[in-house]
Amino acid sequence: MGDGVGCYLCLEHEESIDHWLIHCEKTRVLWEALFGVSWVLSSSARNIITFNDEINKYAFSGGQDSIENHRKYGANLEVDIPIKYLGFFLEDDAELEYIRTEYGAGRMLTGDVKKRLIEVLTEVVERHRRARAAVTDEGSSSLEKIPLDLL
Image (tube, rainbow, N blue to C red; front, top):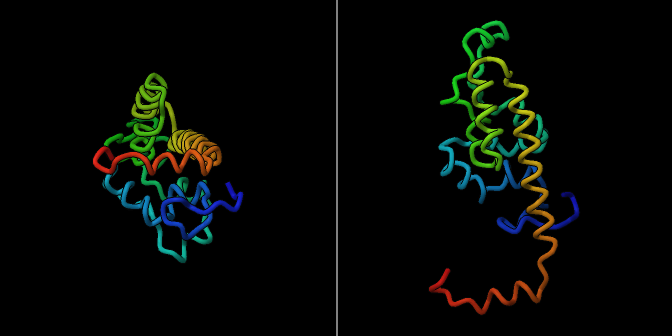
């Protein structure tokens, strides 16, 4: 990230973790369609909040209002946005089930779930960046040969 490569979706901003997952107007539609929530902040707020801060501060959680209550009642997984994102991006089903079980039972805290989400999303974006950097003009020109009715 931060290598000067523009976002291939909107063609307006430098591609970065913050931009691709949170700020890009084109991907905003995807996040709303997948999860039914708006993850994008106003343009003035976007410029001052980092990716980690956005998740830690603004990703609605199903955790309780205190650690004591959370340990007692556990998290409401039905409304927890980090759990929804992990359900989509975390490739290890066993780990996802472990997180759901522990978090739902109150043995794992919201901060732990958000931290794991940040790690997972960072991995996804880094893989995407590396794959995008590996695309050559020769490889992309071969896409022009695909008949449009197959797309």
